[in-house]
Length: 67
Image 1: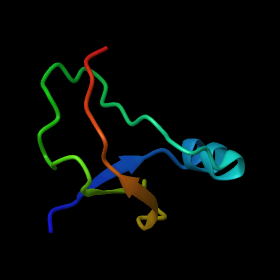
Image 2 (image 1 turned 180 degrees about the horizontal axis):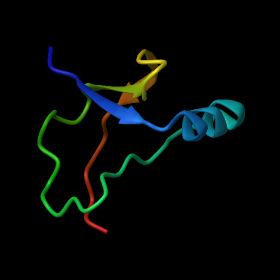
Image 3 (image 1 turned 90 degrees about the vertical axis):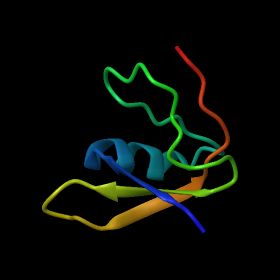
Image 4 (image 1 turned 120 degrees about the vertical axis):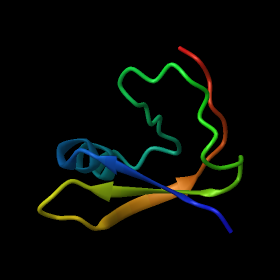
């Protein structure tokens, strides 16, 4: 099984953890290409920046949409 680990900001993680939304968006600054690292339905994990350096949450990738 393939999965993807996206590094995320600690404060953004805390913001989302307090609200527990049913879905979240994950974007990459300046990303102009289609996201093809994993297929829809694959696990998408969120890792915190240093010094935490651990997986803080995750979900399942649904789709990529151009802005």
